[in-house]
Amino acid sequence: MAVYQATTSAPVNIACIKYWGKRDTTLILPTNSSLSVTLSQDHLRSTTTSRADPSFTETKLWLNGKEEDIKSGGRLERCLKELKKMRKERIEDKEPNAPKLSEWNLHIASYNNFPTAAGLASSASGFAALTSSIAALYELNTFSSVKPAASPSELSIVARLGSGSACRSLFGGFVAWQAGSSPSGSDSLAVEVAPQNHWPTMHALICVVNDAKKGTSSTSGMQRTVETSALLQHRIKDVVPKRLEGIIKAIQEKDFDTFAKITMADSNQFHAVALDTAPPIFYMNDVSRSIISIIEELNRVSLSKTGHLVAAYTFDAGPNAVIYTEEKNVKQIIEIIVKYFPQSSELTPFPDPFKLFGGKQP
Ligand code: PMV
Image 1 (cartoon, rainbow, N blue to C red):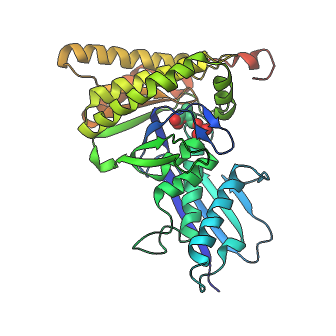
Image 2 (image 1 turned 120 degrees about the vertical axis):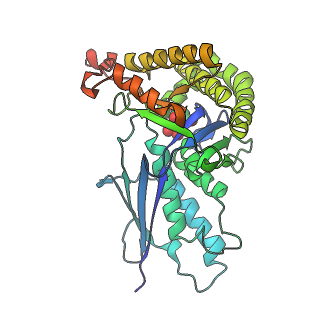
């Protein structure tokens, strides 16, 4: 008997223009468009195997080898429902000989090769790998070589239902997530801005400051920010549209200085918006802030000597730094970071104030 199984991987993506805030929390529709760089397949990634079989009595999920509950009406269920609908309507209803995979339960196993939920975008690669593995199992991307049953942008809508930033990991290279305006979310999808080979000298250095699970999840953090921050409204209306335009042009022209300036400014504004939330959210710690100072100083010296910047830092919802730099500067940046932070055991993460008092973070 035939085995219906597919394995695919999806890498992490790191945003240069941050997504922070939902206008629809069920469909995961963002308050602003965003842009990210998808890291290469050989580094931080999730790998998912999906199998459909008529003998499975229920759909099951294993994450890093541990079975997880599948919440009824939750994000995973919404993704599966959409993929089954696509399989049924676009393949099974049209091709009578196609096996009715959409009617069978699934067993799904996913692995991350890096710490989960530590501000390293594990939900992004996780839901992207899950979506692409089930899409491959259902032959949504391969059914017809002339016109696939579902395009990567359409599949990005499914990944978005799992975790917003996951939609961007369905593409490699430089990727924009267009916020869209439709209440159904049909135009809130990812598009490729430029493939990875457009700017092959661009590198991302990941500095793991702390790989513990983060204190405030992006879901609850975003909700609090949307409810309480006036700065977020200014950011959505007056700041992000201009930055997006600027960074897309910088990517097209491989203009590292503009790319770096916009990336650092947007990371800083995202963390300012987190601080403008009531109660405030602190994602960075003292080590994160030292990394900012080091890169700012390097850039200041380089600007005065050569007229150009050497690196850009960015931080997601956690203390870990991602440093974008061009190949010619990678060695210098690594040497400086290692000089200031010689051993990971010497890094002293900022203590969680709520844990100090034995209480719980809100
Ligand atoms: O998709 P989520 O819920 O993991 O949110 C991601 C939010 C940031 O990483 C902080 C920004 C972004 O655009 O990826």
